[in-house]
Length: 251
Image 1 (cartoon, one colour):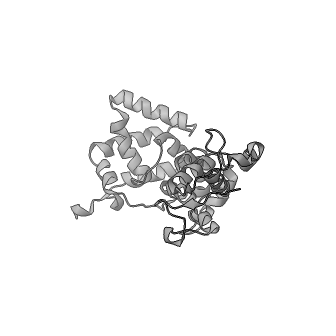
Image 2 (spheres, rainbow, N blue to C red):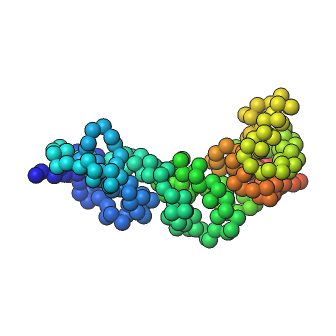
């Protein structure tokens, strides 16, 4: 029986010159073990058109004649796609445990950050390819206050943007059920009453909540952060002579 070799992206046999890595290194890079297994399985074997199998699913259909004769090519982009699939399927408690080394790289998580991440994880895990990617995506939650605004966020928090943020802050404070659907209703109602679009209202609110870091839709972001943290972040940007909101170019 011929078992095909694995080649690098240049078509040559995989070797140290291609940066061949020890198995544990893939774990350190944030790939799940089931993803690595599934990817390696498909490098030398196929069954129909299906791309991803768990080990149990493959065992049910495996046949020696399905082993490929041609060499396989190691493709880390494809491995990332497979890992993305298994991240979405992963149990949330297990995933949070696996994320901990990356989430705590700069210090331990406080209880509030951990609670927010637990709420956000079911949606956020849909957006990442590896564990460090996913951990980095929670930056808008874990950044300490007062946080620095990037240039785009500073621009959004000037003039009309700041006025809109002030009005939104008062409306958000009245929400009894601090859940995404209720918060979205508040945003929609404000836009309708003022004849504005979310494209005009969203940027200053997003800037105040995240400092300009990437984040999903604003309503779930506010639910994950919780009432106290949301109002604290808004108040911080609305405070007179707020140093975080000043543009360094303005002196």
